[in-house]
Image (cartoon, helix red, strand yellow):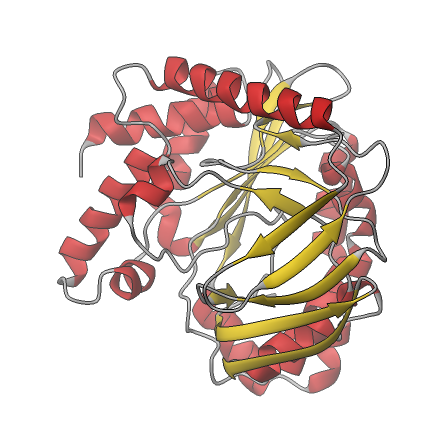
Length: 346
């Protein structure tokens, strides 16, 4: 692996993605497979003036064992010590970095309702933390690096070593680390996104109509005075950060009762180690009234039936086809967007 590019990527994450400030604590949520890169992030963060770097390690294999064998009632609980870690560091103004790099099929033999129960317990326990992140009280970012299982899923015809190296190469391209000056490349990218955001906000669209050759025909009404966002965001103190690297989308929210029609997936969804493939959702007055999936139906059902709110769309986005991600013409099996507080094996 090219150590120069690794260093450039880590510095880009710390100084542009998170935009770590002097004497600020950085909380990193990392798979144990990503330990070497996480240590590099920690070193660069300290060099940049971090007060401390706190790492919450995740072990997918141990999580799988727990989901398969632990008594069901434990999935309705969330560890108090983890809750306190997120809340206390968040209240102290920490920045949060999540390394998203999971095996897309690791949990395929786990009952989806177990994962759903754990997800619901986590959401309830970390409500304050999530609301803080989603309102940008804390800077946060989600990035990816290769793991062996993920790389082999993306490039099944390559050896494990070659697959990992290939995925590194692709990630470097999607996050513009291969540019002569990655920071300048991101400045230009943010500027271009801002132009599109300004155009959409001035257009005052009333609805979006999505169609594809698979049968998608979905009309989404937009609320009055809606705002389009994307690219970088700002904390109340004016610190600019990138919630996702890479990021290409511009997004807004739909009118809750204004979504009607059917959307049919063109790609599979990796949800907590379960692949959901060839699925569809049918909406009436904003609510999902029917759904199907050729694979992963129970996982899809568990997502939709988490609670009443999960029957509705919370966000709608526009993404350009001409982007570094799209140009790779690769299915990544990684949704790569959730805020940084994820399942732990504990």
